[in-house]
Image (cartoon, rainbow, N blue to C red; front, side, top):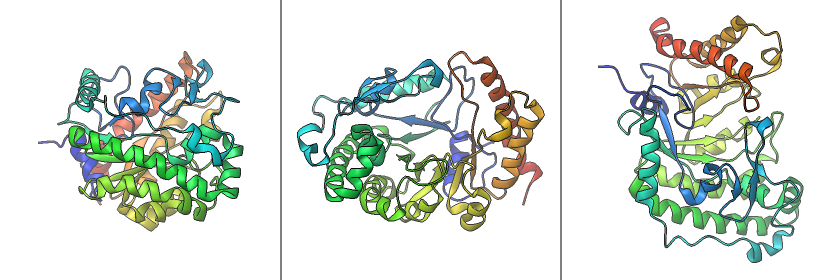
Length: 346
C-alpha cells in the first residue's frame, strides 16, 4: 500500500528517504482536489488579522495589503505603535486568554482542510503562532527603529521578546493538547535576498532563545521542528540545528543550496529550493525553460531524501499569466515528485 502524503513528509523530516517527494506549503490551495502533505494550524487569536485579510492584530498593529501584492499583508506604513523601545511596557500588552476555545478553533480549521480533501490521516499538521520575534519587533517599530533598538538597547529588546514569548508559550500550553500537531513550526524572516539583517551573533543573543523555547514543545515530544526564514540566511543554519530544527523553508536559491545539501545531508530538509530569478521572470520565457528549472532543482536537491518541493510565480490579483506559469511549473514538479525516486533509486 502506498504511503500517504503525511507519512512521506514525516519520513523526510525525520531524515529518511520517502517513496515520493512532498510539496512544501501552508495547506490546501483554492481548487485543490487531493490531500496535501501539510496543513498549518494557527490559533485565531494569533492570526485572525490574516484570516480576515488585514486589520488590527493581537498586539495592536494594523496590517494592510493591496491587489498588486495579491493582498500580501504588511504593517501599515508610517503607523507603527512603538517609537521608543524603553516604553514598550506602556504599549505592548498580551491579550486575555480566558475566553479562548481551542477545541472550537481547531474544529473550524480542520473542517476547512477537509473541504479540500485533507484529513488528519492523510496530511500532517504544523502548529505555528506568529511571523517571528524579529518580525514582531519590526511590526511594532518599523525596520529603522527596530535596528536602532537592537543596537542601542539590546536589554530592552530582549525583555520585550521574553514578554511576548511568555504569551506565545501560554498559547501553546492551551493548544498543543487539543491540536496534537505532527510538526512544530517556527518563523522569522531575518534576511534579505543578499544577506542577513543582523549579525549571526545578534540573532543568537536577541531572538534564538525564544525560538528555542517554542521549539522545545516539539523536541520534548519527539516532533520535527521546521523554520521558515526567507532570504540569504544560510549563516543561521547551525543555530537552528542547535535548537532542534529539522527542516528549513523556503530555502531560496540565493543561498548555496548545493553546498548546504552536501554539508548537512538529510539532517536539514530543504523545503522549497526553487525561485523566480532572472530569466524565469522574462516576458518571453518559454514553458520548457520553466519545466527545466524545476528539473534542475530536483536533480540538485532531491537525491537520497532531505527535500520537499515548493514554489510558484506570484503576481497581482487577477494576473492570469503568472497563474498559468505556476501551473506549468507545478505540473512538472508533481510528475517529478512521483517518479524521481523510481528513476534515481540510489
